[in-house]
Amino acid sequence: QIDVRTERSNGRVDVAIIDSGPGIAPDVAPRIFDAFFTTKPSGGGTGLGLAISQQILNEHGGRLWFENHSDGGASFHAELPLVEPCSPANLPTR
Image (cartoon, rainbow, N blue to C red):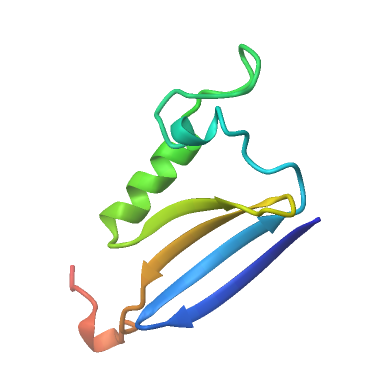
């Protein structure tokens, strides 16, 4: 099962993707955000998805992390600061 939850707190928003699978293996966990690290067979993945996602979030003042749950499953969290919406008056002109 996969659940998606959002939470707004202290000027930030957290989007959590939560699953009921086996969680992240202890030998994989320390490397999960390393560029080019993959658990897929050869030709099955580049190992860039989580590394690039983490970099993008960091560059926007956010963060990406995961948690294993003691009863199984894991959560991935993407957290970003909230910003004021743009209004037409604030948009750049060409």
